[in-house]
View 1 (cartoon, one colour):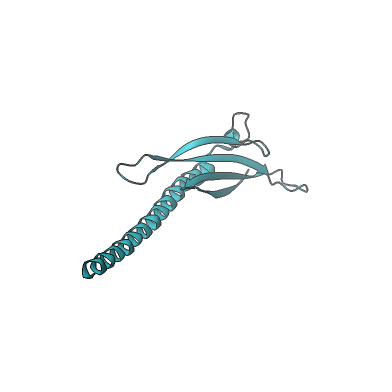
View 2 (tube, rainbow, N blue to C red):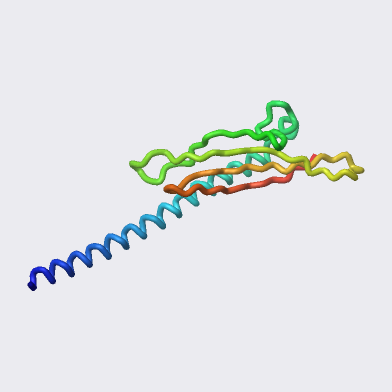
Length: 134
């Protein structure tokens, strides 16, 4: 009887410890994914800002005019030393934002980059937008 009670208490302690470990690992994975996706989108924002305007309006642009879009699978990084690569999908497009009463002749485009990625079975989306005027 005492052995059974001691074994039951030991199993309860083990289960509580296991659940606590899993909770820590789950939140760590979430944090690492946020860092990876934010770092990738920071690179996207930098590219949106430095992409030559002539290339932006050309026929082979990485930002076609909406409703067309450019899409590619991208590597976001690794979550650990022995884990595989983490991948996402990037979509890019631009929208003309120049008002109809444009007396200056300026062109303004809203460049949009959309990153889609998965954590477990859930799918997440992050977006970055940059306004470019010439």
